[in-house]
Length: 254
Image (cartoon, rainbow, N blue to C red):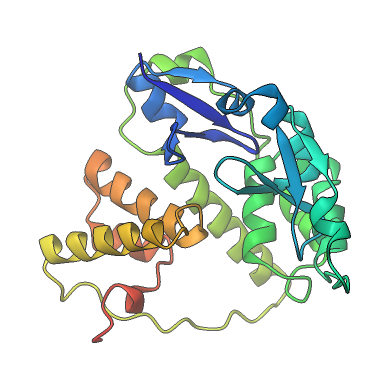
């Protein structure tokens, strides 16, 4: 029996006993047993430590997973203030109040995945709390997968569709308010052999894991592109382009 564990702040993502991410849909398809994240540890070890810089975030053992203090408590952890009190000179985090204000929105409570994408991809300078509220209000309310969704054979990755939906909504949101979107310089992927491109993407993904960055946004996006290519058949170059992957990191010679 293979056991995987719930991610404290993501309904669609689970973690293996080694800390590797796996989608809930994949785990259910493989008939894995899902348990709460806290069961990775003995009760006496369920202590989250305050982040050294971002006062609204905590680190969860055993993988050092960064989540909000609220998410840690909801997962069954006690939040320790040791890391915060050991700082000789506390450094104010200008994003802390901004993140907390967005997470506290009623619109955010109903759309946790979209909210997480916003606070990790935007800054207080590019997205105000009021604009975040208006943007989230225009997105569908997130819900747990229904029985129909669990039993049907899907031909698309729901996480890919969700990311595309968020990206398209944000683009429309910015356009309606006259915000100029800076053009991103992206190397062309179409000239690369598909097999070589896939190998380069896999190497980059493995490299991020080796550096301890397996939960970074880049690693998640790369994994999503590879899964979309393998499961749906979307050309990898198209999947990478649609998800906004910085191709220069895959093709440094371009």
